[in-house]
Image (cartoon, rainbow, N blue to C red; front, side, top):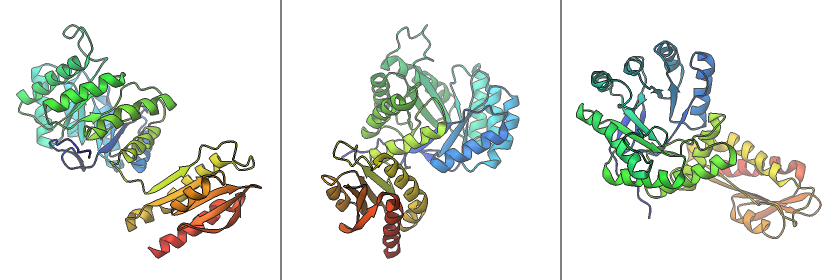
Length: 362
């Protein structure tokens, strides 16, 4: 049986990371921070989708003034992403950032690091150290390998430890799946700081989804990972959706609405658009019933099947289900029993009607 690695816990505002806290989802805005209204809207949307923390990039001291407007307007802890200038990190902490992402080795001199540590300690703000294959000092580590990634991360960790600071989250990422997995396994065997798991520069679309799922899913199945980010080119909202699916797939998060659907084949009646039907069912059922299911602590299993060969069996196993038959019609099942035959156009409404009955009986 899979067991989560035991780690120390830190608090980023209302979000606990590590210890016995659930694995959380993170994302990062991709809008210039000076567009305050747009940034606020994106952060709130990410939160609605399931992000427990959102990171924003602060490229200069002026950005902190925008951060001061953003933090009170969002319902989720904000992490400040800072590089090269310790003063920005200190100012972000004082502005209310719940967490800061820095690399102590490039944030400034020893005095600057001490200032960041003092501000973080006074405010109870954790520090995330991030090391990836592109940020390893090639003068010190000529070859990027799992061992050099971990050694680089530990150098940054020790800088903070030498300043008496231990509210640390560590992120070690590469664009190479095997390298990322091996580096995180080495780090996890060495110390008990919480791990931010992910695959850096994972690309976009299907390639990103597959590669991130393999890397993050593998680590989670090994009990490694206290918070995760899917690094996807494009809309960060897609990152959060994929991250949720990864957590559901490995059993770290319960799926309130589980939709199963067939891949379709030559047995499917050509007049049945199973893909569109499954997408509509997923959208309508989730939006309508997810909150009710959460309140009642209940999950819902829905099947959308295209033919009469495998369809009836899958539909009977689900709480509610549809199985295609000839002539563009579908069999509607509820509670393992066939209810009636419905036309394609009325299938979603009929399915929702049966779900309403189930919810009423709970």
